[in-house]
Structure formats: C-alpha cells, structure tokens
Length: 176
Image 1 (cartoon, rainbow, N blue to C red):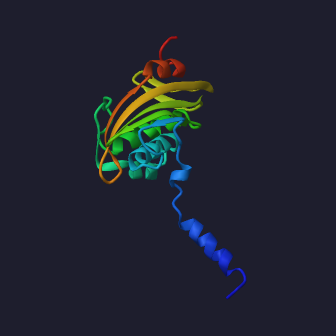
Image 2 (cartoon, helix red, strand yellow):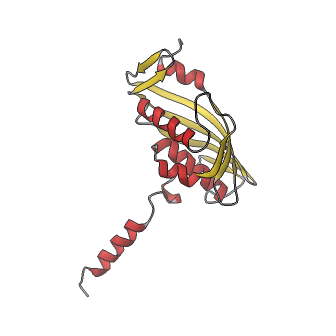
Image 3 (cartoon, rainbow, N blue to C red):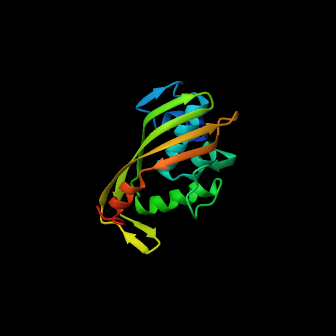
C-alpha cells in the first residue's frame, strides 16, 4: 500500500459527499419550533439555498414530486418547472443574488419564513413591454413563505407573498 493511499481514500470520500449538506445551507437568523436540522427546517433551508444559487439539484432535493404552488403567478407552470423557470429569469437579472432566512417558525409539518433577497440588477429582466436592462442598482426586498412538508422531508405545498412593488421599483419598471 502506497504512503499516499490514505490521502487518496480521504479525497475520494470527500468527493462523494454531496455539496448540498446541511452545513452548506442558509441558517435562519431567528428560528423557533424546531432544530435547524429538523427535516421540515431542512427542506426550507434547501429551498432558500436553491433561490440563492439557482441550482436545480437543490430544488429537486427540497420539493416533492407533487409540489403545488398555491399562489402560482400568471404564466408560471405548476410543479417543479415553475420555480426552475422563475429562478432562471431572476438569476439572469440579478446574478449575485443572496437570500437570507431572517425568521423561521416550524410547527408540525408547516414552516413559515421571512426571506431577505439582496443583490444587484446587472442583467436583463423581461416585462410585457420588453426587456429592462440593469445598471447595477441594488436589489433589496422581502418575501414571506409558508410550506407544507411531507413525510419524506420535501415541500409539497407553498403559499408565498413577495414585495413585488419594491422589486419592480428597484428594477426601474415602476416609478418610485
């Protein structure tokens, strides 16, 4: 056995560890009702990490196969395809998007979050009137989400409200 064998084995084991472990997910600033590693809290943290990164693998880990958006915006497909589409559009507009979980409350199979979205509008955002191009302006808005998490630890239902008025003003789509 080579002297390097233990190091090679350790590196191969590290490579096998998924990049989406609980240690790599956003941690709520304030948490009530559960431990940060509880499966309900973990599903919510994975979904927040998806919104921040745009990584479809995180959405697949967080969302149930029968995921239903109970506040589906017009034009967005139901199921996993909806968040994937929305994330792609949003990351094209705000490539440096950051998502913080300011508050998380877990009660049974439900979790409520207050999410804080920040970044800079340096990309392109589609509107019914045409595309709007960013000029580097700051993006800073909040969203409130309520999830139902199934027995497999995945979000099956989502009710959400975003401060779209603030966001569209920051994008320059609506007047201040």
